[in-house]
Image (cartoon, rainbow, N blue to C red; front, side):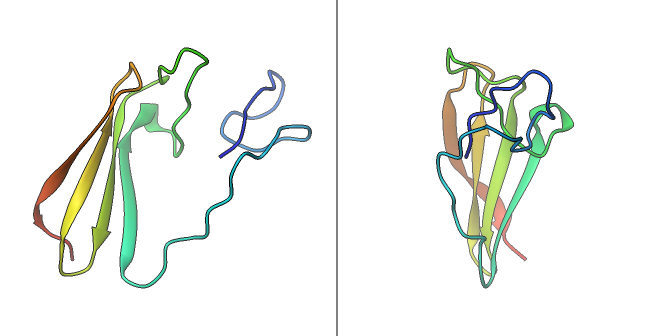
Amino acid sequence: VFADTDTAGTSGVVDSGERILRVQPALTGNLSLGQTGFGGNTYVQYSGSGAVAASGNLTLCKTGYTGRVITVSTTGRVNTQNTTSTCP
């Protein structure tokens, strides 16, 4: 997680001078995280008001278990629900 504050750099990429707020290790084992929406980007971008540029879904799965879908609306509100099938 980082503050993407520049106007001249690349959105969704840590550019020189941007502050990294948190680093999380990659998922391991049989866990996976997929995404759809978010304007075709591979990142979620929040504005200062808490809204996001485009809504989307994150799907967290563990092989053999029911997954979780995390929906992020354009207002920045988050909702979770179980997937309808078992994760591969």
